Length: 360
Image 1 (spheres, rainbow, N blue to C red):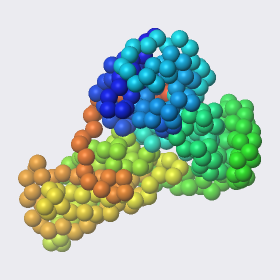
Image 2 (cartoon, rainbow, N blue to C red; image 1 turned 45 degrees about the horizontal axis):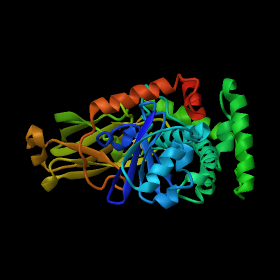
Image 3 (cartoon, rainbow, N blue to C red; image 1 turned 120 degrees about the vertical axis):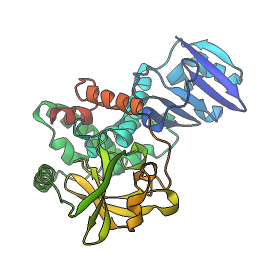
Image 4 (cartoon, rainbow, N blue to C red; image 1 turned 180 degrees about the vertical axis):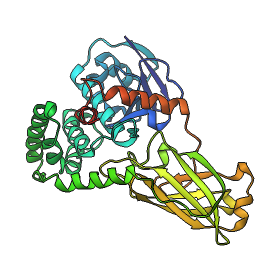
């Protein structure tokens, strides 16, 4: 297997082939290495990451582990070359790929009615342990401690795993406890799951209902996709669409918006929506009610006469997306959904993925 090293303006790009066009963020797994950004297509089964190196000296401590000494030496020369990978550390490469996948799943897992959501506490535990395995190559010297602090609630999730996964959960729990003790991080003890079970039952009952019905005469309605990049992960159904309707009741015109939600730990409880062209847009808040985000507001009667092309709906979290972005490719989104569905049934998947798959 050969590696291409391209050098330009003080930056080096290391790749197993000619660099492809930049993928959208939801297709890209990323690990921030010392002096470089490692990245690859999260859905493509990569055998080794690509690397954009901005500081050869900082990256020198780990380049050989990932690409072998010949590639590391060639990168230091600053000249373009094609180099054979003669040796590397397979365990390190696997851990880098695993860490990138776990952090990708935390940000982009396409939870939906078809794809079970992942437990963020389980992901946090696995991210902490995997970060420790590759801590020498990470850009953040305190990455393991930071990851452990995000995993302080993982013990309860690990103790509540389905029976076929209890042995794996116990092993992860033990390793996590030891790592946390080494770094002076206190994990929270196991707590009862009764409150969580009640909350899930209430959510399921709400999801099974018909939801609130808008009164009056429907003047117009439509649907719009929700960009994954515009909303928090595992909050909006990745395969669903937002629906809007304009209604008239007692001489008043209202805009009603509904967005299918996902039953997931840590999901967002509020979003925002914008309807219509930018020069006369209507903004409204959406609140999570059972299985949907719902919002309604009064609008001028003229909104009902907007031409079809101006009846646009943008659903977003204002922190993540202060302005609209380009539409995401339906083909790329479907590729991620197929990939996630396969992961739920894969014996080599992460513990979080296997737990979600077992609970379907």
